[in-house]
Structure formats: C-alpha cells, structure tokens
Amino acid sequence: MMATQMPPRSCEKHPTIRIEKLLDQTVGNQALCDAIWAKTIAALGQLNPDKLQVEGREETADLVADYLLKWSLEDHAGLQVKAKLVLVESQTILWSQLYPCRHCDIDALSRHLADQIVPCVWLKVISPPPSRGIMQRAEKPGCREAYLKGRYFWQQRNEESLRKAMQCFKTAIQEYPDSAPSYSGLADTLTLLSFYEIVPPAQAMPAARRAALKAVQLDPNLAEAHASLADIRFHFDRDWEGADLEYRRAIQCNPGYALTYHWYANLHAARGQHEAAKIAILHALEIDPVSLITLVFAGVTSHLSRQFDEAIKYYQSALELDPDFVWAHMYLAQALEQKGDYKGAVHEFENTLRLSNGSNCVMAMKAHAHALAGDAASARQILRGLKTSADHAYMPSYDIAATHAALGESKQMGFWLNRACNERSMKVFTLMQDPRFDPLRHLFEFRQIVDHLGLPRYSPGRFALS
Image 1 (cartoon, rainbow, N blue to C red):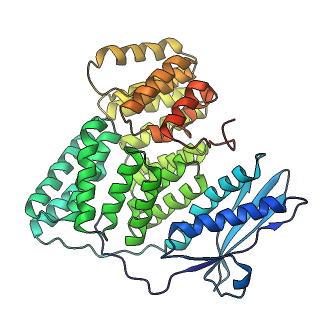
Image 2: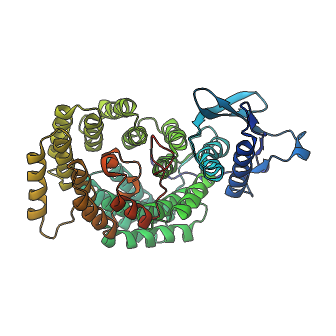
Image 3: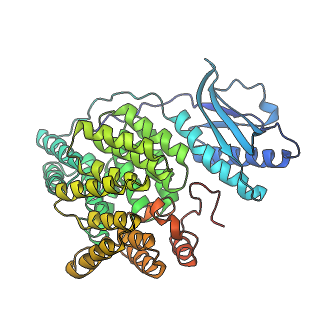
C-alpha cells in the first residue's frame, strides 16, 4: 500500500481554468462579489503559475478552458456563495459547495472565502483520478527488501513496530546510501515517534528533518521525499506556508501517492478549510480504500468540522478491518464524548489503554471524558497521577491542557498549553479546531497562545474569533 512509485509523467499541456464573474443575485453586494472574485483569481494564480493557467479577464471570455468555476451570491436566510467547478468538455460538475457569508468587513470576508474555495479547486484540478504506479526498484535487492519491511512495520503505528521500521530503514540506507525512499521512510518514522508522544519532538525531529532533506537532495522528483519534508514543516517547524508548498510539490511529483493527500488534509483542517480537507482525505481513500490510518483520519477530519456521526462511521469502518487498531478506539472515544455518551467514551478509552499498554496521553484523554461527565474528582485524580508519577517522562501536555479546559480551569489550561508549545508538541496544530477547547476559546490566555503560534483564528461555527 505504501509502495514507492514511479516519478510523474510529464504534462505537455497545462490545465486552464476560467473563473466566471461572481454573480450578485441579491441587492447591493456587487462590491463584495468583485472582491471575492479578485482575491480568488489572485490566490489560485499564485499557487502554481507554471502548472495551472487561470483566466478571469473579460478579454479572454472566448477562451476554451478545461475547467470553469461558476458561482453566485444568493440570499437564502442569509448571504451565501454557491460555487461549482465544471469540467467543460463533458459539462460534469466535479465539485460544488455553499459558503455562508457571515457579517464582517468586505476585505476580511472575501479573503476568508478565497482561502476556503481555492484549495478545493486546486485539489480537483491538479489531482487526476488515481492510478496505480509501478514500484520503483532500488539499486540493490537488499535495500529494496529492507525498505518494504520498514514500510510494513511503519503502517502498524505502534511503538514496537515503529522502532522496527526505523531499524529497517537504517539497514536499507546501509545497503544503498543513495536510497531516497529509505531516507523518506526514516524521516516519517521519526515524525510518528514524535507525533505519538513516544519520543520528545526535540529529540526526534531534527534528525527527521535531516533525513527528509537528504531524500529531497537525492531525488528532487520523489513525492515521498516532499511529503516527508512537508509534514515536518507543518507539525514541527510550524511553517504552514512552507508545508503547503511541499505538499503541492509532492502531489505534482506523483498524484497517486495517497499519504500526501492524507497529510495535506490535516493542514487544511488545521486552517479551518474543512471542505478542502474532506476532498483531500477522500482522494487518499480513493487511492488506498483499506488504509486503516487513512480511514481513522477521515474520521478526524469530520470530527474537527463537528461532524461527529460521520467521524464515528469512519472509525467503525477501521475497526471492522482491525478490531484492535488502537487509534480507531482512541478517536472513537473522543467522538462519543462530544456526543454526550460519556459511558461509551470511558469504555473506549479503557480499550485504548489496554491496547496501548497504558499510554499517558490516553490517560489524559480519559480524564477529559470524566470532566465532561461531571466527575471532576476522577479527572483530577488522573491528572495528579500523571503529574506525580511521570518523573522526567514526556508529558502529554496538550491533552492535560484540554482536561483543565473541561474543568473550567483557565490558568492551568494556559500553563499546560504553553508547555505543549515550548515542547514543540505536534498536537498543537489542531488547537483552533479541537472542540475540547471550545469552553475557554474566548479567553485572553487562549488568544495569546493562538497569536504566539501564528495560527489562523478561524474555527468551526463562526467566521472568526471576535
């Protein structure tokens, strides 16, 4: 499933998209329509001027484009933009969506809507239907075998398997020091060891970055290499623009590499671009429909947009394939608690603790479920245990902060969130979308942390933090 695939085929003709003028079907909102239209053209044109031709000028109205963005501003119990992307040759609607226009100044609102629409259009135009590539053979059979074993263990997503994967990738590099896929695999393994809070980011991520950069140096056209570097830019460096660029490079190198879309969906979700995140994660599932972790993160994508029933269906689909997949149980528990099923959530957290050998981060999540259920005593007892027994172990600071938020303890929430930021916790990227922080999202301490991280202030259910 995680095979390294052939470099992308060259494209002689770049796709052309025509952006129609945004029609004002209301009264008195032409200035808003013009602003949205202009910002969308500018943003889309800046993404890949060498790969995508964007036209919106009146003098090119007769241009025969490959794609057409048709849209209008309507008033149905409130202003909304109705957008659809059409494949011109067959007149097939590839994508459509409604975007509510909440009250805000024209510049901010038009910028927000362009930020939402542009990545959706880009993903639909640049990403063709998935195709199965042929595995690129390594220079030496021993390297190839070690690499494939490494990717197999990497897919298991537990500490023991990740450590085995790391050793396999190191063996592959020893067999063939110029193996770019093996350096990419090593980078991805170190990234997951950090993301799953097995190894502190400060210990793992500098080595992950070196491995990813080496992979890009060895093979600049390898999608896996750019995807590895993008995820490091996103989670550890917090360079979201740099991450966006690398994800798009990976897609252009190989539009059939599923993991790029999976990880790119995480970036879109963190930015509050939930429709783009959905497009990306569903494309990953089109390529690899039985990937357990992609099914789980399709659920996470729905979860962060407050679609909890949809999220639960994805988690259950993953559990049908593997009843012991720990991450499906963990995220299922979080969805159940958001729906108010605290008994079911605690039960799933207990399953997760059993399967993860008593993970500290899962203990902190279980404390959050107790806090939401009104059992503050049990929540605080778990927190005390974590804070006193961990010694110098890597603490789940982000999840401890979430529990303090559920307990209404804003100062403690701020302390542990700041600690998570200083530790370079890779969970912080969900902060603006994580429903666990909704109760205290309006507080000054929370805003300070958001601004310090440079996160956008958009969150589900509102246009921006007021």
